[in-house]
Length: 289
Image (cartoon, rainbow, N blue to C red; front, side):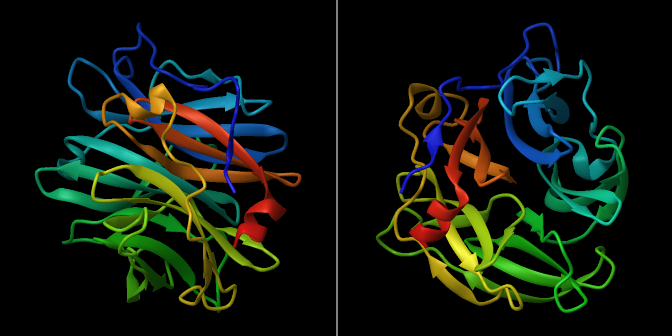
């Protein structure tokens, strides 16, 4: 089973006259509400190569209007080299965004919150004193606690929290698989999608040739540490010229997906250079698992 690329791909690229996003535009979080698709995406400019987060909105999920200025820029010593790879989850009346703060200190999983998606309040580094990334919040409490996926290389981990800031009970739930497309390192994509069969996780992995692909896993609804199923084959492989050539070649990498009707919209970064869209019926993804 393969995700179907949209014929308009890539759907979002660099803007020559925006100095903060005239080099790369990729790795977008996505929110779908009241008929609107909202993207918060990572971008870099030729002036300093620092990652900032931009915002774009669409009524059809394909044609986007974007703001001229970023919605999150580096502001502290842990973000000096960039704010990267956002994943957004709505919990109650607020949006919570996990992102990677990058600096000489390394990579730190950080949290910001918003009511509008346009202005963000920093909540702090949630996994201090360790290099970590690929963090995503589940869109509901499980057993009265918040749940988060993160990545201590090379595995996907699960952690739990009472307040979204302090995380405990860390455990590995998925590891790379020798001899397969995800044999070297894996990481969560966007927030898991709740289905009647379990939490659908679209994740990335790469092999010894550093070819990044997307794959599927299904986690138990009540205990997401239990992996019910994991597809053996990837659902998206870099084959298009604009996925194979770019800032980092041979990369398809997602930070977010949404379900609209019975269709799953997967937004992904292509070669760390541009944003593309691939879709599939939700039931087809579950059938593949």
